[in-house]
Length: 478
Ligand code: HEM
Ligand code: HEM
Ligand SMILES: [Fe+2]
Image 1 (cartoon, helix red, strand yellow):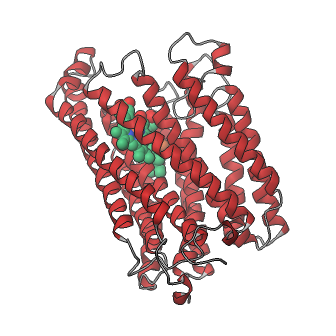
Image 2 (cartoon, rainbow, N blue to C red; image 1 turned 135 degrees about the vertical axis):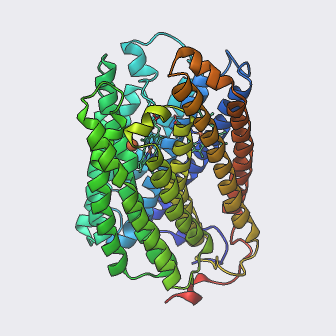
Image 3 (spheres, rainbow, N blue to C red; image 1 turned 120 degrees about the vertical axis):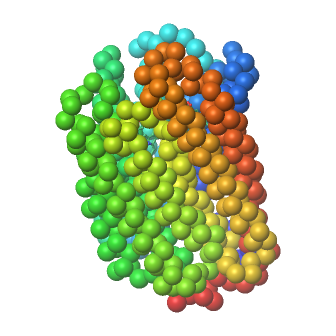
C-alpha cells in the first residue's frame, strides 16, 4: 500500500486492474451516450439541425447502442472487480481476459466510426456483415457480433473457471448460471430472417430477457456484493435475499416477455400470458428495495463509502419506479393499445435503464476508486463531498425531468392520436404538433442539459474524490 489518496494500481488485484480498464472505457462511452442523446433531442426541436450531416437515425442509434455497450463494459468490469474477492484466488485466465478487453474495445471503436461514416444506403447481406444489422439496441454488424461472442466466452471462461478452482459462493453460483443465460440469449438476436415478425420475436429474447431477467439477476449479484462491501452485511442474509429475488425475477420476467408480443403478429394467447406475468414483474423489485433499505437501516448507514452506498440505494428505488411502476403502467394490453410506441415508452425506457443499471455501475465506480486510492475514507466529513452529492442530485433531477416530460408527451399522444383520432395517419400528426407534445420535448431537452451537467460533475468527482483525504477507510470496519 502506498500513500492514502494516491491512485496506485498496486492496491488492486489482477481482476481489479482489468476492471478499472473496463470502467474507464465505460465512462467514455457513457459520455458518448449523453452527447448523442442531446443531439437527437435537439433534432426533435429543430429537425433541420445537422440534417444530412448527422441524421437523427444515426444519433439515436449511437445513443442507445452506446448505452448497451457501456453498461456491458460496466458489468464486465464489476464482475472482474469482485471475482478474486469472492473466489479467493487470482483470475485464472487474466492474460486472455486482457486480450479480450482490447479486442472488444477496438471493435467498438471501429463499429462506431463505421456508423458515423456510412450513414445511409441500401440494406443488403454485405451491409449486415459490415455496417449494421438494423436491430434496435444491438445494431453491431455481424463481424463484430461474432467478435463479441468470442470475447464474452473468454469472460465466461474466466468467471466460471475461477469460481470452480477457488471457492463457489452463493453469489458466484448465481452469477455463473446467469452468465450462461445472458450470453446464450445474445445468440437469439444473431440470425437473420426477412420476416419481420419472426425477426422481432427473437430480437425480444435478447432485449426483454436481458433487461427484465438476466441483467436484473446480475445487478442482484452486484447489489449483494455491494452491500457486503459498503455496509458489512452478513453473507447469509444477502445470499438468502438473492435467491428469493432470482426466483421471483425469473418466475415473472420470462413469461412477461409476452408484453412485447401484443401487436407484432404473434398468437393471441400472448395477451393473457404477457399481461398476467408482466404485471407480476414489480414484485421482485419491491423485494430489492426492502432488502437494500432494510440492510442500510439495520446498519445505521454506517459505511466508509457513502457515495457507493447512496448509489446502491438509488438503484433500489430507481429500479422499482423506473422498471416496476413505469413498466406496470403500460403493460396490460388494454392500456398498451393506447400507449404502445409513444413517448410513454421512451419515458419508461429512460427511467428504467437509468434507475436499474446506470446507478449500479456508478456504485461500482465508487467502490473501485476507493480501493484504487489505497482504501481511503469516503464517508462523513470527506473533503470535497459536495461533488458526489451534487452529481447524484443533478443526474437524478435531470433524469426525472426527462421522464416526466416524456410521460406528459406520451399521455397527450395516447389521448389525441389513439383515443380521439383512432390511430389514424392524421391523428399521428395532430398529436405530434400539439403544444403539450412540443413543450414535452422542450422540457426533455432541459432535463438532458441538467443530466449532462451531472455527468460532467460525476467524471470530475471520480477523478478527484479522496485525493486530499488522509483518513483510512478501515476505522469503521465491523
Ligand atoms: C430494468 C428493467 C427494464 C428496462 C431497462 C426496460 C426498458 C424498456 C425499453 C427501453 C423499452 C422500449 C423498447 C423499444 O424500443 O421498443 C421497454 C418497453 C416496455 N417495457 Fe420495459 N424495461 C424494464 C422493465 C420492465 C417491466 C418490469 C415492465 C412491466 C412491468 C416493463 C414493461 C414494458 C412494456 C409493456 C414495454 C412496451 C412498450 C410499448 O408497447 O411501446 N418493462 N422497456
Ligand atoms: C442528455 C440526456 C439524454 C437525452 C437528451 C436523451 C435523448 C434521447 C432521444 C432524443 C431519444 C430518441 C427518442 C425517440 O426515438 O423518440 C432517446 C432514446 C433513448 N434513450 Fe436517451 N437521452 C438521454 C440520456 C439517456 C440515458 C442516461 C439513458 C439510459 C441510461 C437513455 C436511454 C434511452 C433509451 C433506452 C432510448 C430508446 C427509447 C425508446 O425507444 O423507447 N437516454 N434518448
Ligand atoms: Fe419487456
